[in-house]
Amino acid sequence: MPRSVNAVASRARRKKILKLTKGYFGRRKNVWTVAKNTWEKGQQFAYRDRKRKKGHFRALWIQRINAAARLEGISYSKLMGLLAKEDIRINRKVLADLAMNHPDAFKAVVKKATKA
Image 1 (tube, helix red, strand yellow):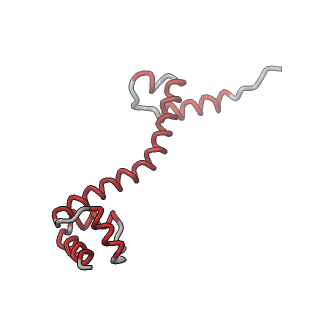
Image 2 (spheres, helix red, strand yellow):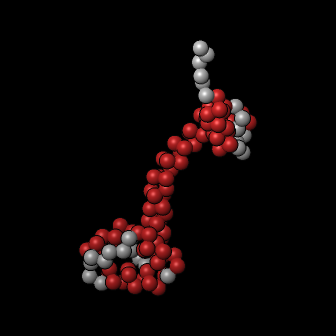
Image 3 (spheres, helix red, strand yellow):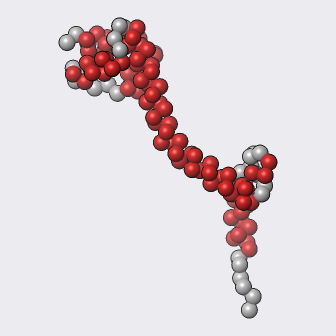
């Protein structure tokens, strides 16, 4: 009795991956093993970088807060310490937005923190 290999499902699985690699350069788009390896590696990078993205944004917010704080004559480190001491709970994302788009509000926050 011949062995059944279900070629329909195998071909469909391969076509699915090859469809996902459309637009890749060279053999990465049309040679099964190369395309599969490239696509899998891309999925690994996507997963890893979704985590890294959060760190990159945090670093950006810190840079923006530091730049704005130094215009007010205080370092980022001192500002964050004073905010914690005064129990002013504003996260870095909001603080960076204030620093970039609402400098007067940022100045008010700095003034409130340094008043102590």
